[in-house]
Image 1 (tube, rainbow, N blue to C red):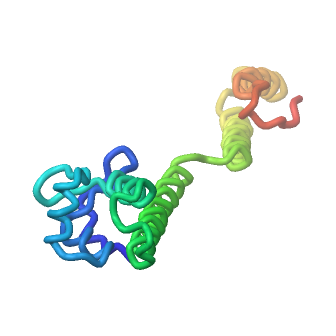
Image 2: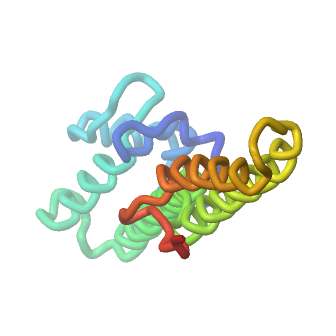
Amino acid sequence: MIKNEYITEVNNGDMIISTAGLCNLFDVDKSTLTRWTQKECPKIDKNRWNLKEVIAWYFDRLEDGSDNPESREYRERGLIAQTLYREEKAKKTAIEREQLQEQYISKDDLSREWEARVKTIQKGFNDWRKDITPKLSNLKLSELEQILEEEAHDFLMQFYQNGYYIPQAERK
């Protein structure tokens, strides 16, 4: 398993691994990495390697016979490194997916919340109508209720629209 301390960064989906991490992953020493570098193993700088490019280089050398292709141990090391790389990349993708899921609201949740908000506004207006009516004594109570009910209804109709994210609520 690749230890997190060996992965120094992730750039565009590629994991950058330290020299110590690469030695640990392939079970080789630093002198082996020096020989690999002389054989054109891709290296970013003194202590950083692009793991994806190193694995590709490693398998290319096995396929073209540049190193002993019969060496079962050599091939196994490459397969282990490739497997660990893919596991780490899958973990990264899972973390990204979880983060994205937390950012979005489902259509059903949005619809339920919107409907609850509209009902709250409707209740507030109905309560307002009943509370304010007695305070306006210049008109008959029934006339005031009728006027306020119409105004509240007109206002509420602004919230009741058709659309993909708008709930289908009962309309008067």
